[in-house]
Length: 234
Image (cartoon, rainbow, N blue to C red; front, side, top):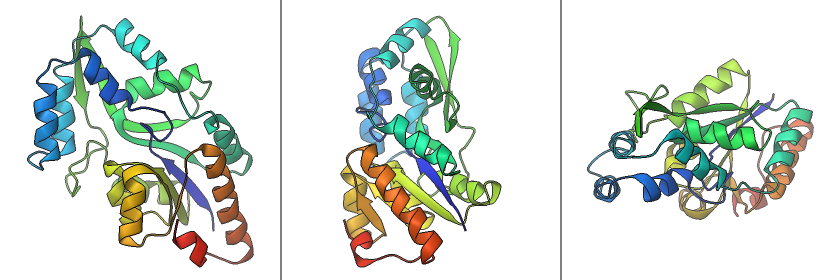
């Protein structure tokens, strides 16, 4: 048996939400009204993001500059190296923007990582378009990237018997409850895992993530896929 790691990006790997920061700086003010529609449950996250991206007015150079202002967890590179050394697939799985994610990863020397996310395409001048190559018609959350469907695909493609999921927010709820075998959680995802009694551990940095993943790898090798009481409750 083996593990695969699926990891959210915005505010999980990064210290702030790159998508929100892009909208705050370069989108027309109506993006906030669309955000309220989503928060109130009137539209899904996929429709929300598509409409918001249509309101962005920024050149590629401006988007690149904003991406360069986004910092990542100081220990994420070490975590990525740990995964390589232990033959554990590490996949970035995000409802965010692939253009921005790839720019940040390239800057950090991590462009080799697989990224599954919404596709942000520059169309002309200062205009952009969002498409959703990893959406699913059956996605209950109507996300631009259906994390549950991707998790099932990864299990099969990577021949992984266990999914180790890392995240922080609402887009991580469904996959944490339905597909993940173990979750590292912070912020609203941590609260959700506690409420739903999901196998999880709280974390604040990827130094802790490396330690927790190592424990799961060791446990799987020695004891099989069981969880201790300490591991169930953060």
